[in-house]
Image (tube, rainbow, N blue to C red):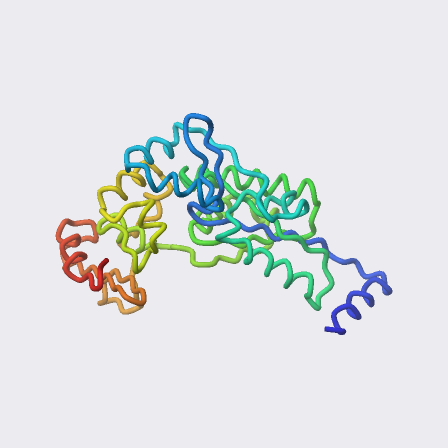
Length: 289
């Protein structure tokens, strides 16, 4: 541990410029806390009472209250978040999902043997929208952060659907001048099999947990009613290019947890969205509860 301050002190003593680095985290679907106005109910995974109220609604009530007709703003404050972290946007995203992760990134940067002035920021977005629409908002957020901090380097870290949002950003010509590197975690490049399973088979306690099952419903009809109005979710569904393995002859969708395994096996002339695939999904479920 003593080597780190010596390196930093040496850089200062030798008048070596210390780069200013901003690391911006882009969360996955449902990970941003949304204020949805008086005609709806806020989406705040960090508020247990709030999420409990969602769980008591019917599917049609949830779909109406979460619908895109209800315009959103992002939370800025959060329980247990310091003023400095609120300024960096940490309050925008669920601390229950990502709080410890953000802290660990900041701690790693603070203890880096490479001298730098580094800060971790968050870029929340309305996860109900299409990824293209969200990309516009996240890009604006990146530019705003850069205007505030004037960094030498900007690095993005994404989780899940945040990776798809970020890919829309990096496809722009201007991105090369704004972003030095991107680190993707769990990016569903060809789709998220868990979304497919929930859409056609519903949620299960063993794979999804009790809270999510109460909110999104065990029946596929409830899940579809709630989620189908979100362009983002539709863009998360697997494409025909999805493979659970690298074996070209192995065209299965597979999701496995400790107690449950879901397998879909389309035939040679079928796609994963043909009705027969739904039959296969139900036939191969094990340990459903």
